[in-house]
Image (cartoon, rainbow, N blue to C red):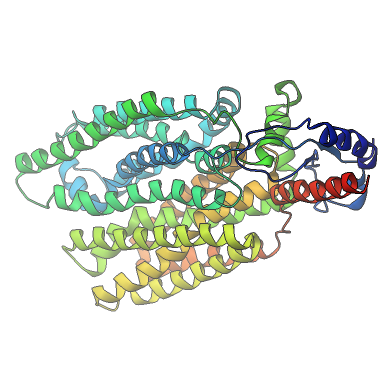
Length: 496
């Protein structure tokens, strides 16, 4: 059936007043187009639009409580990210306390990456079949349990138990990383969805910032093992108390989705019957989507480099500036705070311009530039220079995170946002493990400069891959077609 065949029916509806009332947002009649997700990038050809099916204007509404959902998720993500870095930023202290190698400490961070890889597919299935609330509740429960396990590990012989606690916390991470874009799409309007995704990512970045700043303050580098154990215990109990409070908050307050969808794109997504959706078919369509797969690799290269820099930051700073654990944490804090600003600016910019590929490519190239400057200035002997270069690096490298999420949603709509984000993060975890191990080995053998140059090479490869991504903004087309067809139908009705 062609779109023209549908016009009389909608004209009759408009004439008889058969539309929804009491709406707070009207964006127009929605053209619901089942977009092909195969190899072809030229999705919206005229022939496709000619055969598109029109759906009537549906009610949309923005709820104030959307900000509460975003805040609760952000603090949960913050708590989990803090526990990721609470060991590595003072790795020299923990290697002394547990009498272990630096590689063992690195694995306390890398376990987060390794856990994600086998668990992401079942968690994405859970997200699609049980919803965002169940995923966030289960993830915050793992985060809370892991934090309490670690409260019993402030003894030199308890490294195995602290690794177990870190592993349980890492399971909680799997339930986090695909949520920001999904939460933004479910709760936020068309002109704020990228900003909301950026704020969701900011929660994770805030946790990393606290993870850089607080452990060096709470756990000073003292020689007395009993005193050191006391400080470590305090840090663990604080993090466990916060994780418990967040878990209770999630259970009581967090909701699945609003009663009325916020956008016509969400109206369209909700109209898909569960019987028509196949999780494995969705995965296969994404794997055949060439622009998306290029983004998966380029995103993994960029974020994997960020993970390696974050994990090995203490070792890089201490090599050139001995006994500067506190400043190493402050430099990490500078990276993340600058990145939070970058993330927010990028999200607002996307909402204003919708220039997804252009913005992503520019930020990627600036991340490469920042990494090069950081690599060649780290050994100059001036900490203030490191603070500046690290801030520039963080602004662009961390600012890239929400860009990747939102670009992926555009390239893969109407597939589940959790599925596309999950595949992006799976790539990031794989490259994070590879880069952390390889850069750590290079630093041990040849020093920090070759290790950072190693990362620069892969950032260059990622930038080139980004340039080959064809920008096919499917979600934007779904919303724009709604407005176009509303105008068409309204004109036809007036003419009649």
